[in-house]
Image (cartoon, rainbow, N blue to C red; front, side):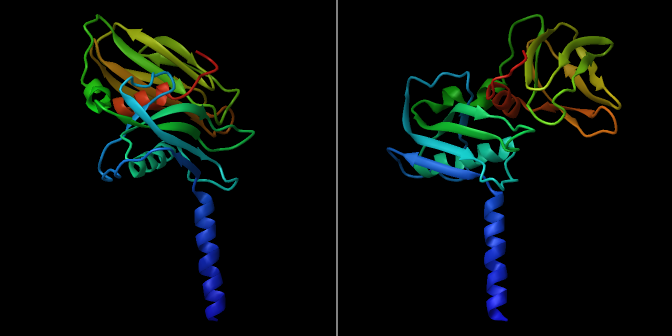
Length: 240
């Protein structure tokens, strides 16, 4: 009986482990590990590596073949943990592979672990407070590669179409209509989010599509500036 019980525990551990992403970390130089509360700055594909940074190593996070716990945020958090272990205070994404309906359902990244001397200069929290001196607001719209490959939809701001959202897509839109408004899209079902537009501010809208009876249903989510910036900059879109 004890043998069967032990086998069940081992099987459960193996199953749970296989659900997590595959992590491969190579460290060339390390510093004392950082506290788990220490924030790690994430730099996207389009951001240059800071001139005052030192590369400590590299992290690769992929799919075991059975991985299910591999959303973008999960993968980034795993990378941050590896960076803290090496004493790094930033990661620079150098390769990003999105989920594919005909391949892996996981977000996969390769990132350099960095030790940045003046890390406060790159803190996203500091950047999020910035308001540009312009007469428009910036709306960054993006949609990862995923479900509903062939399904696109028009994105509206109030009564006006502002873009056509396709699979594997991102675009930047300047909006000159200030105040409370609604962003919405419709296929077989309507989805909408309220937005309070202020000139000079930057907004991030994450789009996707979920299963429907005929044409799928649009999903719209206004992201906080920190997450939105990280996600928007961390993949190369086929359609822009």
